[in-house]
Structures are given as structure tokens and as C-alpha cells.
Image 1: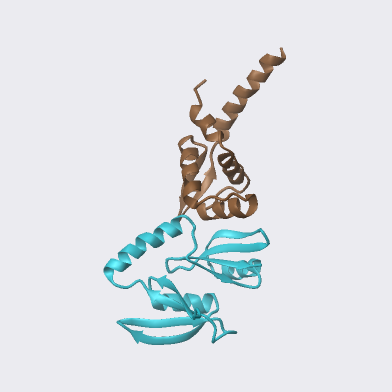
Image 2: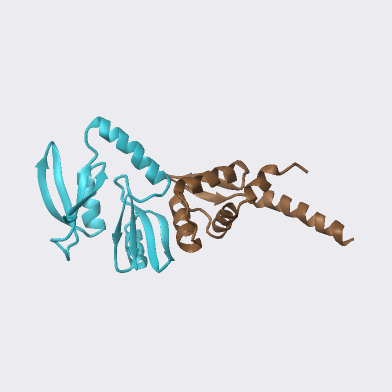
Length: 99
Length: 131
């Protein structure tokens, strides 16, 4: 399998995992809406720039996509395949252990 | 001191006046010539002496250009220019949607506040809230 280093790195942060959860639950949010949800629903105290930096990393790993909808951009969860690959690999580890 | 006027920059004052009155339901308060444009404000019909919203032209070329970059970045990220309060965000959402207003953020409630964000067709996003 490919190394998936970028995916593991992207997942190695609780805020980034929360962003993925948020987008998987409410797909297609603007950056503003995501920041409002992180602040008001999850008590994340972070600047938009901070959130933006996390999003850059998630996008680079292919887990999030930014799509233009007319004048504005929405963020979408795009990591089904990558997360599935990682999950399969994690699962194999535990299978070997139980044999 | 007291805040009596706040502003929103608009591409076209006449178009903005129509949207802010006919669609949103504000009322024109002041409309006088000012430096080649108009000093044009709207108020809430129930509070004609309340805070006025100035529909401000984007102005001279250099200002307009800088402002355009700024406003486009805000809009592109879904960031509202300003915020109005209302009695019921869901009801306003339905009312405005029927008139073809585009929302970048559907009504959501968090921390006891319900909010939504729409496009004012004049280059800005506006957030409405109730709590």
C-alpha cells in the first residue's frame, strides 16, 4: 500500500479530526460557517487563519475539497477512499494480533 | 457618543435601495445628493429614529478596486459584512427565499443563537440572527 503519511499526519490533530467530523455531518459549509460551528458548538477557540491552516493540510491530504459555488466557496469532505484505506490497514494490524 | 449610522458598501445605489426596501423591508430615510452620489439611508419602518443603514457607493476608482478585493475575499469565504437581528430567522429565511434571495448559510442554532447568511445582491453577505 502507499505510505498514507499525509493522511496520518492530517489525522494526528484533534482540531483537524473535528473539522472532518463537522464536514462529514454537514457537508458543504463556507469557511465562516465552519468557524462559527467550531466556536459555538465545539468550544474551539481559534482564529479563522488557524482553521484555514488546518484546512490547507486536510486539502493537501485529499481529505477536504474546496468547491466554488458562484461567488462563494464551500468546503466538502472528500476523504472516503483515503480513510477507508487507512481503516483497512489499521484493521489488518488487529487481525494479525488476534491470530 | 452614540452609533446613529452604519454602512454597507454597494455596487449600485439604486439597485441597493430596491433590494433593501422592496425585498428586505427597510424604509428609505434620507436621500440627498452628496459628492456625485447620494447620501442614501434606510431604517426599520418601526424605528424611523433608530440606527440608519447607509447604502454607500464604492467610490473613487482606487478605493473601489481595493474594496472589491476585500469584499470578494469576504464573500468567497462566506464572511458577512454585518449583522441584523430579527424576530425569527427561520421565518425570514422562508420569506426571503420565496423572493429569490440566495443563502450561503441556512438557519442554524448554536449557543442559543439562530443565524443565517444571505447575499444582498450588491456585493455583500449579511447575517441575520435571533436569540
